[in-house]
Length: 186
Image (cartoon, rainbow, N blue to C red; front, side, top):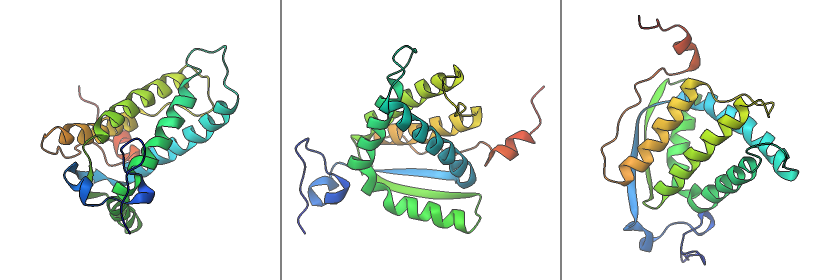
């Protein structure tokens, strides 16, 4: 099968990634990736996306931030379409670690360098989504401080490493329960 590039000059997951993309790939390493915390954050994200999908059908135009659901859904769909295939191996390893009950795993992704700006945009929209949730306009609660910290670390690893920085291991709690039992600094 021959790889082809779409009209927007980006390779879609259905098309795979061939030799012409190899020069544009950057290796991103997620060290000490917190498997359980990722599961918790993913569950929250899934809840948010379901609620946003409903809101996007009939946006509450009288509310501040009413465009956030549609913009976030569009960006998530675009990221999945353009870059989803590049994460399959790392995602499979992460899922295998979760099935074995591992607390953490080191993951490696080979992703297009141009993913970094889209990841930054995703972070900004997720912050807007949290503000939308905090203003009690949704049933879904805003992400917890730990989920936000994890999300920032995750996105920063992609954006920083795409720019040539070294990987920074996750050094926070492995899940929400661990954070609840940590002593607070005096």
